[in-house]
Image (cartoon, rainbow, N blue to C red; front, side, top):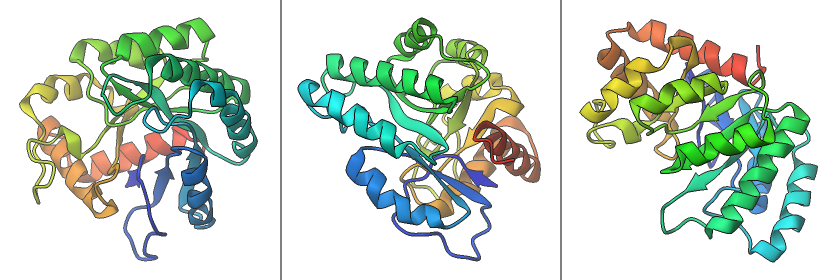
Length: 238
């Protein structure tokens, strides 16, 4: 099994059954804190400017220049995206930061890690306007879009990732996929599905895999193996 999006605070135990983790970027400070964790060959770091942690608009160019420098050696750009929540940055700053990071990832031929809340159509439009290559692709982490938008993301080359936020009770020992997300989950092609723990702790990954297994009537070992293959293919770790 492979955790496609995990906020780690320490290197995972040597005997952990997960074969790999993608460590998303948030901002310059967090990216710097993440760098030593990626000395573990199972941990693969991304760098980015998250919609919640953006600088002021006049400071954005310098932040983007710094991001381009630290992108060396990263497996992906992100988290980046658009978010309607009140804690996110001003819409104009979000839009500028997102567009610039899409362009950077396209230039580097590097997958994107997207954080999208309430702005699926807008994010897809930016990808089209920038001309982001489908063959480079990326992932929408903690995917919570409608069943109807799944096909648009797949056509754009993006894998869709399920986290404990898709559970009826995200803290329960046994995860159950929310009824309103079953149709969405069923529409994701199995070779475009990822699983993740986000900030819920790396030991929750088997719970996510089990919940997906029961929702799709898909054996647990097959879910674990297929989603691991998908992650390694997306992030060029094969």
